[in-house]
Amino acid sequence: MNSDLECDVLVVGAGPAGSTTAKFAAKNGANVIMIEKRQEIGSPVRCGEGISKAWLSEVGVTPSSRWINVEVEGARIFSPSERVFEINEKHAGNEVGYVIERDAFDKALAIDAGNAGTEIMLKTHAIGVTKENGKVTGVKAKQYGKEFHIRAKLTVGADGFESQVGRWAGLPTNLQVKDMDSCIQYRMTNVDSDARYCDFYLGEVAPGGYIWVFPKGDHLANVGIGVQVSKLKNPADVKAYLDRWIDKHPGYAKGKKIDMVAGAVSISPPIKQAVADGIMLVGDAARMIDPITGGGIANGCIAGKIAGEVAAKAVKEDNVSHERLMEYERGWRARIEEKQYRNWLAKEKLVSVSDEVFDKVIDAISGHSVEKLNVLNILKLVKDKYPELTKEFEQFL
Image (tube, rainbow, N blue to C red; front, side, top):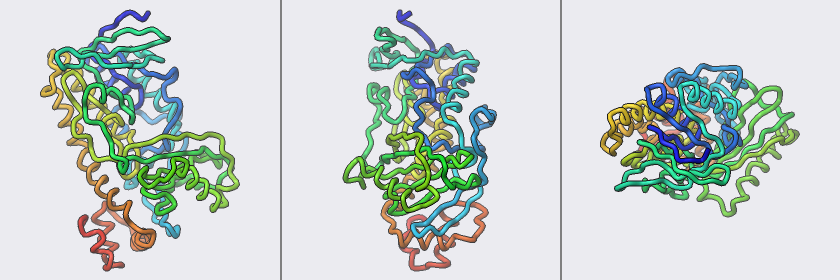
């Protein structure tokens, strides 16, 4: 098989953003190949496995019992002293609504891409991009030990947080240490999680990040932590933080670990440039992860739809120049950039907030029903109860 291939659109990476891009490119008439370096799409899982509901219909995804574990009512935010603030699912953000089986979800999106006409190649690594006169023209690939070329009118880098495609293409994908979280998560059984809520614990229990508990049903839950890399003295400290928290909570200390995943996520401002001649980046590769939550599925899929539609038009017009691909750049930025940037600014502030201030903020908003949950409305409640904190957050008022 490993002779050279040609296509209109080549998608590198079969995660949610890649599969969504491939689906919409194929649906709009492009000849699409999607390659995935692993032998199984969706595995291993590196995700808290929470998603919201609102955006699914926008990208043509129908909720299915094949990949939904639990439908939650909302989120609970715990201050350092464990005062709690409840938020309903509608206002809780892109990681609350359904708790899913991520591997089954990723496979469902890949099935949609395949049904739309995408050719899917597993265990196929991109080992470099090819260029002509500065324009990306595809990739050099490797499958089962044999190397070959995939020539594409347009290449889409959907190869995740560590994106090599973007780096090879010369796009600015570098990150500062303060814009990365180190994460570890256990799947635990015999725990006392509440299946109605996704729980988030703030403060020094997870410096620069948070601890999460996402219920999976039947006393099963994902229990994980993200800690800002710049606040770690030793890489192993992130596991120590999580183990310490579990030991102090009897409902989890009695649990049994049946699975463990670890990795890093970006918590950065929006990428400065996601396109160049012959190439687009999408999803985690384009730093579309929410800087507050560390979740990227919704943003990646929303941007993937825009990417796929623009890709199909661009190759049909035989124009994949940087200027032509700016339609994608403008489209995804109009849809998600402002919130991503605001959340990055909020993240920058929150990492410097003391446990005492966190406690006061949660105390001020506890018991209130915030009709429209945003930073401004929350800070108005804080100002009413703790006016001395106004200066702390004046940049957001």
